[in-house]
Length: 117
Image (tube, rainbow, N blue to C red; front, side, top):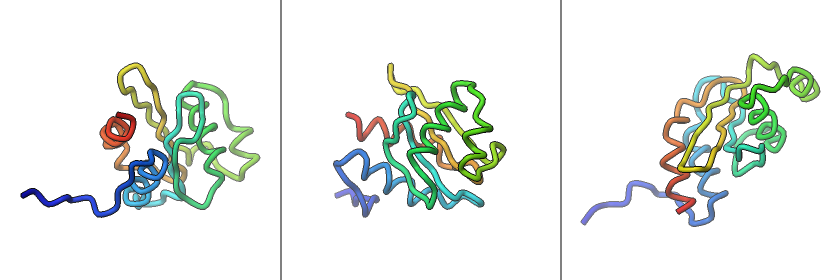
């Protein structure tokens, strides 16, 4: 019999994303991390920042849009914003973090494949 390695888990996609990020957002300097749709809608996130704004700004950065004004309005440095694009089939997502890159960003595709199935 195989032992389940994940203690915390959820069938709710948003909660599953928050659990994953809470366990993996401990990278040095990371103050907040989100997973967003390509359009900038928050799917889930953790941290003491405006997560909806981080999702929108992260998606804008990934799309190549100028975001310095949006970051300045929030008291963020554009240099402290990190993004990574994920393609899962025809769907596109953005992982955004503030303060440092999310080291587990490469593992998000497996998470999204599971929770969106």
